[in-house]
Image: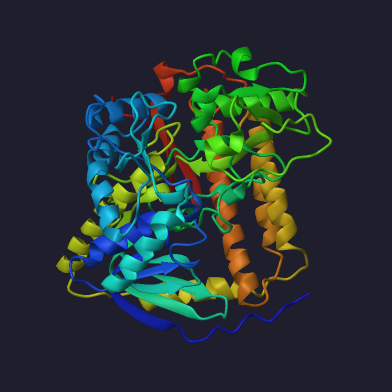
Length: 550
């Protein structure tokens, strides 16, 4: 069946000094900082700024040192813990930048209107597994909107312009420089953003997996944008799976970290204590990668209960965590103090490679937050994600503003715009029939089952074949209408990111952090103290292992 190509409205032109892509904490922090330079700043987001993103739905845990006296903690200690958890392949300069910059963010967020939980008139600080010292503070109600909503209000009152409901489909180049972006909304209106500097802060890609607790729509768009623009990505094999989420869909976290000092228990169908079985007797040191692996092994080897394990504590679980109850099966073996839990996709350690100035190696393009790699290495510690977004969002906003001040004009080649509109139009005129929704589910299932927590060469090679087949199948499905077009663009991005994860996982023939290879179960520091870089060369995905600085 032949479909007529979609007619696009004439693109609207929007000029600005600094363009920020992404409405989460990294994007808002960058926009606020850039605006402090007295420049025009536009923040473009697919969702409502400050809402329906991973920052907004987070548990609002923020790791920082230098705020509480008498703990013996320091930024150097924060670096040490982060690198140890990252299994030694972190970019140590980035880690040090985050640790040193965290203290100021505590005060800045207070200025923006965010409130912290307190105890006896002081900020509440708590210990978290993997961190040697208590260094975690909690925003009000332990919900991300406790800081994203105040940040949104602050940014708006400062004069940051919001463009919401717009999916950016391409970063526009002039030579080796990014000079803006092109996006489209659900009404089919294309927008061309002319910018002297651009900050990419569009988050991660949990949506490429069948089970994820990420916000809807988080499917790797920023990674694909950067890849197509010629940026280098790294560490894409390292995907963090949160070990304990509600059993049915994995959309809701049941946090285990606050329970380790309250007698955390984890049992399989036979009543065995899984933590002891896998040598995790020192519960305050249980990190997410090790626990997720143990739980998944129990489930896959048939010792689960309805595909899950039972997590409990000596205290009432809801009171300990502050979480609302998870739906329980009245006919299951679950007691009132136990919940059925299983792992879910949570966070991407990989992303765009940056330096300590948030520079990407492409002039005019900066990046911050989960869109980047380097800080977390092979496994992220709890609390570091939000810290990273604040610190590097600030740096990216400052650097972007400085870049914009140096630039006198913006020149976007019309060929850049016309070629992207042509690509979008072609997506609406493919011949054939089929369902993008069905292909999305197939992709997510392939990624979960073969490129998930437990990996091996056979499964990864099969997954890669399936990804490439799905890409060919999507090229026959016409995307009629703007909403279908947006879905098709996002599906193409998901396939690109899935291929990156799969190829990098195949390349790394060892186990490290969140990357577990059943056929290479040991960590190999002799050969794999390396980061795998990914770039696009001659329309091919090129991978290159690069030794990390020790």
